[in-house]
Image (cartoon, rainbow, N blue to C red; front, side):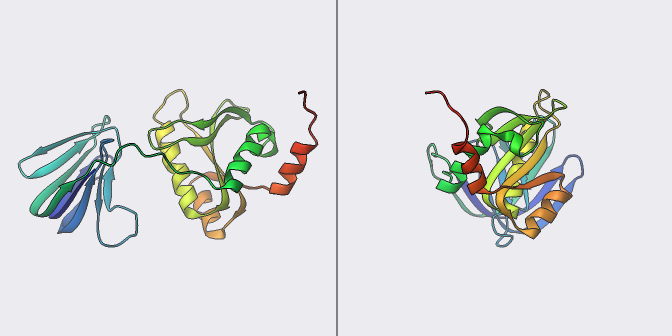
Length: 219
């Protein structure tokens, strides 16, 4: 990972186009090819970014990132205050707590409890930003991306949308549908999810456990 603190201006050239005037900012360049421009605000959200895969080159005091669709992020470095890097190595990834892991396992065995027409394709479906909890197909053959949380919050919706954005690049899966599943979904998260076309489903853990214990199994 490389960190550059600089007085810089930023231009995004793509579907809409956007510009940031000169100001001190933090530019993060990761080995996966992503570039993110941060201010000292907005918590973890960058002001502008380019998701991998993209090609990053430096030329004439600027950092230029171009993705396969031809979108460009140009960071003009007017004054570099810090430029440092450090190899982080391979990350083991985020581990779900016990409740989320159990929910995921129980729901994977009975996805029809969410919707009768769902059919499980795979648990932990891989993407370049982490595994999707559950990938299913609905009765129309459309891919449904399911994110399982103990408590459904806005961060969970944003995570699900990032997974959808990745999978929508695959013509075999696009366009995907999103579904947030949790024991409780906060009102703000539900409003945000609905606005982005994400279906919200609340489940009861004890009911799922009970249906599991009542199933007949061969050993």
